[in-house]
Every structure is written in C-alpha cells, then in structure tokens.
Image 1 (cartoon, rainbow, N blue to C red):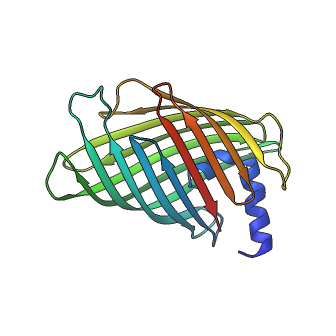
Image 2 (cartoon, rainbow, N blue to C red):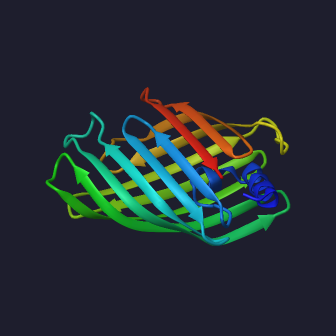
Image 3 (cartoon, rainbow, N blue to C red):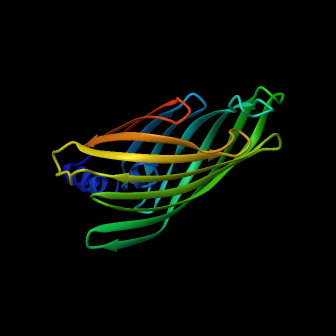
Length: 218
C-alpha cells in the first residue's frame, strides 16, 4: 500500500471505528482480513476495496444454538459478499454511514443432509466521532433448511481522542439477538484497541461467553 493511501486509511479508521469494525468500509485497492470469535458465533472474512463505495470478498461463518433453545442447531456457511456504501454524511467532528450488503454461498449443518444454497443480506447504520460511537446492524441468513436473523447494537466511548501514532482505546457495550439460535439478548462489555492497521477487541458477555475480534488492513 502506498504511504499516502495508508495514511488516509488510518486517519479514517481513527475517526470512524464502527465502519472498520464491520469490515464494510475499505479504501480502494486495500485488503482487510478479520476474524471474530465467540463459542456460538464465529466469522472470518477477507475483503477488497474495489472502489470508494464498493468492497467484495469471501467469508466463513459458524453458528450454534445455545442450551436454552429446544431444537439444537449447528451450521457452517462459506460465502461471497459485496458491501455498498449507500450514503455518507460528514460533519465537522463526526461522520455517519449507511450500508447494504449481501451475497450467496453454501452451508452444511448437523440437522440436514448435504449442502444447501444459502443467501445472506443485511443493513448497517453507524455514527461516530473521535469520542462517541453508535452502530446498528441486521444480518439475514437463509436456505431451505433454516432462516436466521442476527440483530446487534453497539454503543462506545473513548476516554481520549487518539492521535495518528497513538493506541486508540474504546469501551463498548454490544447487545445482540440471534433469532432461532438464542433466547433473550446477549450483552458484551468490550475493550477495543487499535493503532495504524491493526485492530483488537476482547469482551465477556452477561452469559459468561468470551468474545475476541482481530482485524488487519494492508
């Protein structure tokens, strides 16, 4: 990555944490690799910025129902995905983004035979300044064997406004519901650290589940 592009990308990451966390905003000609892990929800993605508004890539997803759900289910999905920045609103000290994303792939599960064609779609809206952060998104995963919806809302606060060379620190609370996979809402208080082109998160939910997330742009 040329130095000018890298500097622009890092500056935007410092000002727009939620878009980068989701892997939706990727600067043109830049790659992003991300891995997200909880005991019941795991995802890995590699995305490439085709244009200032469009990124495309591949991903792998693992979903497992919790002990509170009567019909236990476990599914793995491999997929292709495209992310489109529909609209962006700039303010002197903040930015808001609106995205749509979707794709298709194949899934295998322990409650059906063989592999099934699977469709994925979703929406995201986020707003962020250098000290405050709000992100809401919804994902749909569907095949002829299952239909899942995952809703998440994250609120964050930074105790200081990080400069370019500093480690940025954020304290977050993420609330998540996974329809037909969990009962109620799982809440993850989370610590986020990032600097330059690396991004780390660690949290533990109200149900005792650990969450880890790592991202790298290059």
